[in-house]
Amino acid sequence: MGETPVFNENDYVAGNPRLVASGLAIVLSGCSGGGKSTLLTALAGRGHAVHPEAGRQIVREQMHLDGDGLPWRDALKFVELAASRVFHQFNTTQVGERPVFFDRSLVDLVSFLDMKALDVPAYMRRAIEIYRFSPRVFLTPPWREIYVDEAERSKSFEDACREYDALVEGYLAAGYDLVEVPRSSLPERVSFIVAHLPR
Image (tube, rainbow, N blue to C red):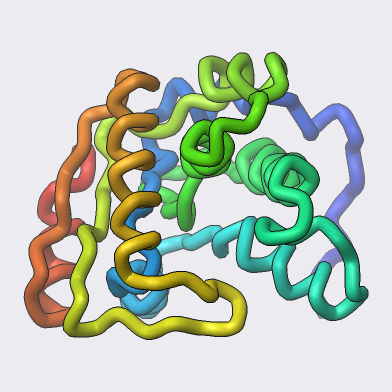
């Protein structure tokens, strides 16, 4: 039997400066329905650590509870709940030798509020400056041929494209370099990302 991990609350460091300094927190973001989740599943299958999309987790939880923290009911509440989940994911990530993938980031959440012309809390703007991911962000572009509308992501392809444009603007404003993942077969897309990871 394995040993029980020793709990030490001091191990939880807000902002995780060691992870920031490592440059190994890799964001995969992009257009809804652009194949991002499939890519991350394939990367996990290759042994890479992957953090799931916080926003999708929040949607599932809130729908299960009939809560109002949903993007179509209370966008700000949804964003704050999802941001708290991202903080936890980031702060509990152990720094190793291999990159760790994050399915979206805080920039996605703030860009969502900006697109809706809603007020963004000051701490959220500050968080984007403190919780720094690897400078190179991978984006899956709009891809109509594979786009599927889902219950957790009920929107038209045109709305998804508008969100994508807001994402691009948000990441550039936050000082990240964007790398668009080509529209190609899954193995080719995975190989493209792996080939462009920081060394």
